[in-house]
Image (cartoon, rainbow, N blue to C red; front, top):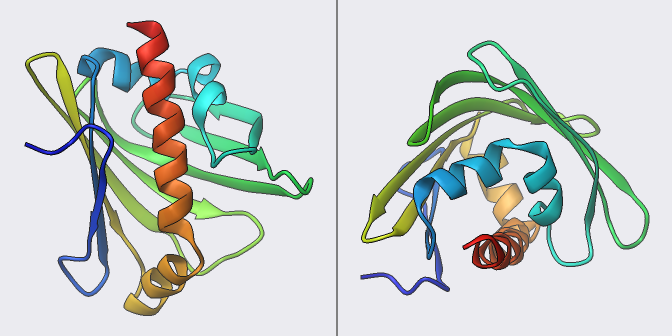
Amino acid sequence: MMDTESLTITTPGDRELVMRRVFDAPRRLVFDALTRPELLKRWYGPKGWTVVVCEIDLRVGGAFRFVTRTPAGKEIGQGGVYREVAAPERLVNTEAWEDWNPGELLVTTVLAEQDGKTTFTATLLFPSREVRDLLVKSGMTRDVGETYDKLADLLASMA
């Protein structure tokens, strides 16, 4: 059994990155934290970052857009379209950044609950191996770890 504080990241294929973490919360709470703007704003982004725009139209074909602000004041926009919404166990969406266009990602998020804990698995399919490797080298994995720590804190406060 995985420790609830650990984020595991694997690269099972040339263009994939799989992130997995167990949260000590039921999957309905985790799903809500991923999809409700008032909750997502409280945890999304690494330490010191804030969400200044959070728009979610949670339906197949619906779009989302987030703008985060770094501690240095830089704003980073990203968005995508939901391709599948199966609450509370699965989301599939595209994702792209507004100021950097290496191509669109396809993100499949699966939430599996056992004994009141939820295993969160996000599979990111990148347009190329080069884009995946560039993001990994950019510090993305450290930032994701900090982001999921903030999510774990939010879930603990809601339990």
